[in-house]
Image 1: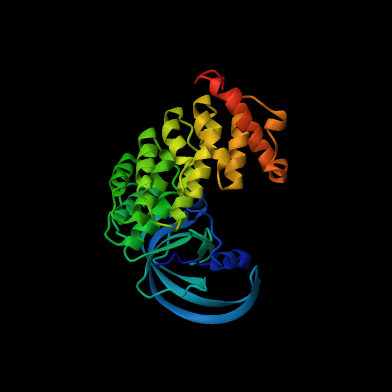
Image 2: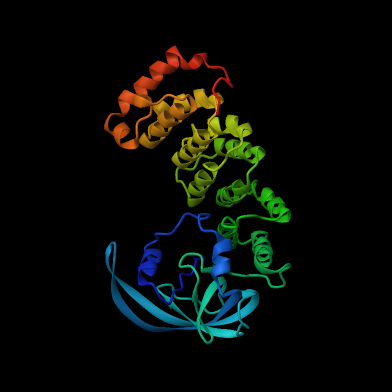
Length: 341
């Protein structure tokens, strides 16, 4: 099942979505999209028809855009700034909708019974089934609907619901409890997507659970969820997570290494020194730079010890050797707590 990029305007955004250039799940605040929308609903596609095709320029050259109109029926309303029609027409581009398809829609009103997606990437998300009869009001009502989808057996529906939930700024305890059970899902896609959601409100226990899970993860490909997890790791500020973050900073997965190093840099504790020093030999240049600048900020050493990225990229070996030498002669003498934050 695909996310349906339905748009009425802004051809540039349409081209980006059609080319697959979309934000990492979780980086778009669903609360903001919800607030900006005039209508948020669980809807069904009653019919579709092709209207025209035209050529447009994109970053990869000329591409053909296919336009159509879908007749939409509202099953449940989560928000409406005006009395919502039971049915409305929605123009779409490139992604042809299927009769009977369900979707969660964030829409803006552009006229009488005419709506456009409030966001080109998460404005329309398709599901095989969106249960009605949600509890609560507003965005909490939407959260409850997505939670019911997460509990369904349909893999694609679960993944789409998790991607939306990752954009929620806060989640209820009932949602978090249900998600916690999915961390042991036999599907790595589901488990990793769930980690990406939970790490938004992570505690030390879940960072350690992630470390344990990834220690047994052998797939060569890095799904989008790994990128999301790396992004969420970079926001952790709890010093109690240092042991797990230190281990994760050596992960074979680049996104995990980067996110863990960003967290270690921000926590700024000398206890992380040994783990950071090991990353001076990392295969990735950016991770090496994070190691250099993190050590500089933690141990209050600047000048040649704290190059900007431009200087570092010109001669990384010099700065790496400088820090290795300092660590051998002086750094290891530091005891945890010697350096003030």
